[in-house]
Image (spheres, rainbow, N blue to C red):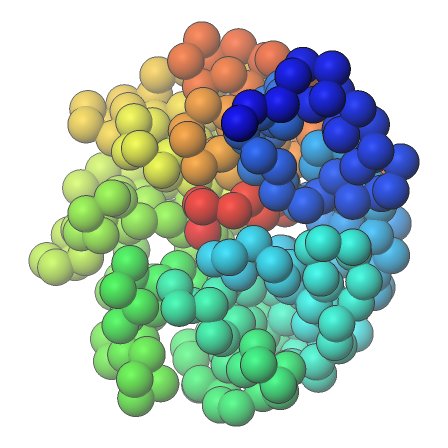
Length: 325
């Protein structure tokens, strides 16, 4: 039986007062551009902000990259300066654990089965595999120079790691925990972040300067290098595959690319230093962390216009959203 509008409204108010607005909401309770919770790391405030509701959770030094378990119950965040991974309970924002990883942990991704977090230790040339049942490092994978971030295949059998030192894209067999291949990416300077096409056959690799490489994973061929905004950034293939979006921390624009034509569709001015980009699971909303303006911008993916802007704490860096790893 459906609740009345008045009952739904009272329930939302109660959740806000209780500080639990980060808990997943029912369809009748959702409003605005957050069909599911989103979590943004605040590097300058050593914290995390949870949307909707803008609840702030105290974390560790310089909270950087974050990732969410598939069930949405646990958020993990790297702290490069302390060499640690922080885990939070998304229901209440409480810290579940702090795990010592390697030197300068940057990107973190969670395996599709939700059992492990893989942390790229950029200064140590390793990946720490963290068991999320016991919050301990169970394996260390050696890589080429400066591993920055990982993306898993949908079946979880393969991991792809960007090697910012210049080697290209490392291919990892997740069962053996070994790098089996390194794919060079000519035309880009310092592979930084990446995402995969829906069919898993193409890697979209954002570099450290101003380019995105479209890489065929089977042949190792670079289909195209696309010029985007200046500086490094995150990159996201929308869950429905309709668009690819990337930021530009040294610029003011977010760039949207058509994955079929490999052409830039639009650049949207969002303010100084957009870095993290992540779409909602329904591909309707695109969340952008704007580092220089201390805000989170929400873009309507249909109209390609800014729908909302939310002021946050210092240096919002990365965004994690349930349903879009």
